[in-house]
Structures are given as C-alpha cells and as structure tokens.
Length: 217
Image 1 (spheres, rainbow, N blue to C red):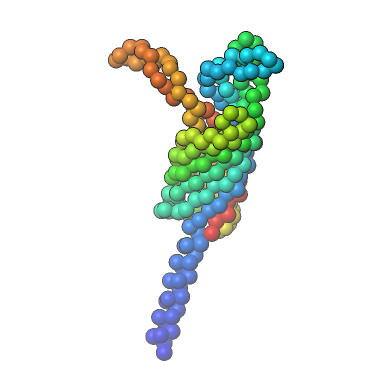
Image 2 (image 1 turned 180 degrees about the vertical axis):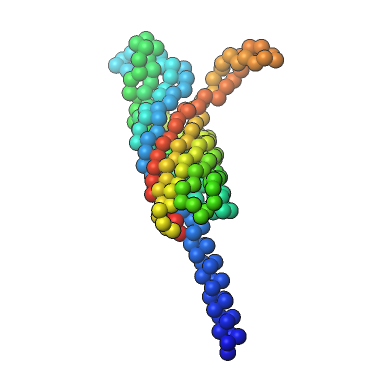
C-alpha cells in the first residue's frame, strides 16, 4: 500500500512540475508606444488642382504604435518571438517645386515579425535584458493607387523584461524595423571597383519604441 502511495505521490509531483513548467512556457505582451517617421525616394507626378506636381520622396509620418508580442520558450534563455505592430498614420509627398512636403493620403500599416529572442541572466532573476531579431512583412492599407501593398521587412533590437510575479511582468522594447519601399538607380562606390551605377533597394528605416505588460503562463 505504501509503495503504491509513494508511486502516486511521485507521479503527481512530476505531473505538477511538468504542468508548472508548461504554464511558464508562453508569454503574451500587449503593448503601446511610438514609431518614427521615414522616407524613400520616388520619381512620380501627382495631379492636384488641375496641375502636375513632380514628387521626389514619400514619407510615412511618425505615429502611435500598438499591438501584441508573443513568445514561446525554446530554452531557459531563448524564445521564439512574434510581433504584430499597427500604425494608423499618413504619407507625405515631397514637392520639388516648393521644396516642401504635403499630405498625400492616410494609411493603416500592419507589421508582422517572426524571429528569435535571447535573454541574458538566469530565469531566477526578475530583471532580464534581451536582444531580438526577425524577418517578416509589412501590409500597407491606404487610399492611394496601391491600397493593399505588402512588402518584405526585418527587425533587430533589444529591451528588458521585469517579472514582478510568476505570471505578470513588464517589458520595454526598441527595434530598428526597415520595410522595403522600392528600387532605384544610384551611384555606389567601393575601394576595389570604384564608383558605378547600380540598382539599389530603398527602405523605410523606422524605429519602434514600445512598452507593455507581460502575461506569462
């Protein structure tokens, strides 16, 4: 009888330990913050007021950022990282004739990143800095001629997590988050072949700074 009791107690102990470990595997962090403006070169003409305006750049405005980050533990220090980040913003166009920007159209931008996060220090401490990087895409829904534009994007950054309790924490996150804009001809110089014309990719080089509450389970 005692043998079976010991086996049941041991089984329940192991099950509880596994359950607790499984409960601590996932993190969901709703966040809010700020995303910077950025621009890239274009060569287009816009019709306005019966006239034609030559435009040389498009700029996305800085705006409020909000969304969710989800982490799945891989090891004690590493996690799979997913981020959905939304901006309700607008684009400005640069008028060559007036040397100034004017509002072109409104836009809702959704950024999706899939990557890996690495935390420093052991899981026993409450304050854990980290680095993070990922690849993904950006969906741009706007009132312009390309209302549903999806382009490649990537990210790299870092931050810090503070675990106030087993299930609740706080997080600050900063990322460099470029999105492909277009390609254009440009002069490129290197020490071996000198300067030459080539096709280059232009990106919206934005910075995302957010903070949120961690729900861990």
